Length: 184
Image (cartoon, rainbow, N blue to C red):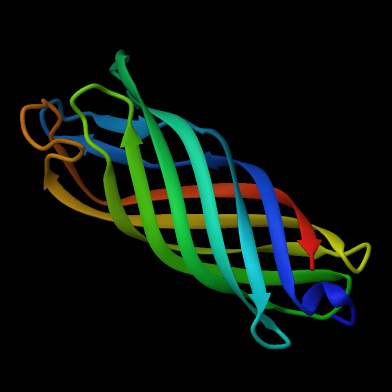
């Protein structure tokens, strides 16, 4: 791209919509599903080469884990993604298709008394479009998938004494985001 937007730092606050994510409750045999809900976050990126950028991503969703057979037993769950990665631009025009990816951690914070926070390794991959109507301002649309490596066949969120036994290897989630690009 021949504008100053690609020549330095970019800050992109975004809002979006996230869906997916479930755990199997070993005790009841039911699935605990994360409710679809809005998310928000930001990226900070720095030019690495003509077509690539280093990127830090933070994305948050306030949701609930719900058992479809017993909705009254739902509890709040805050999901935070913190990733280091990057983007690869596929052109140098004002509208730029791109791919993104990252590795980092997922912080799961349940809102139920007696349950503990969990932090696990996660990966992400996505793609989208960036549009630069000016040199310093743009719009970013992105779809991104996350995979949190849970690998549990016992208690998650519990140090003992709670009644939640889960079985899962992966906590997958997907989101669509729309953000405003500020270039410096």
